[in-house]
Length: 217
Image (cartoon, rainbow, N blue to C red; front, side, top):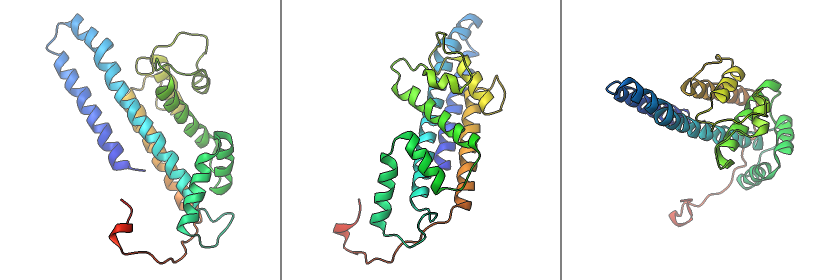
């Protein structure tokens, strides 16, 4: 995972959060409250959600790349072209089929780890695809929240934060900054364990061109 970039993004959003908090101190109490509730907090929460979206796609990519090079089924060396084809094959599978493939190609991990990743995927999909940024019913179910309520957007919903904090075991009142920290640290730890325990195929020796015209750009 691109941990350095994730940490830099989190630091950037936290800085914006602190700047806005300082600016509110010069406002009358009622105006400061309205600014925080209706403007500043939804904005910074949405920025945190964008970071979580990046985290999901980053760990999804890393897991697929690792699985494509797994030696569990075939320990023989692999060409770079065949490696690329295997990556594309895994990418093209539906979600359920891909998870079964990954579970076969990678070391056995706790079911809760896969459920955590799936919750992150559902959160990213709700944020990306719902036109009102509302949590989808399947995400609400995963978070243990009732589906028959009118929820605010993901950036404004205290219920969604409550559910995410509970899933991550960091407290029911965790802020989005704490949720993001817990998510990327969990992803980092999971990838470390997978990489340490996955036997990898070596690449076949291949001739390569030194012609700059044929380099990848």
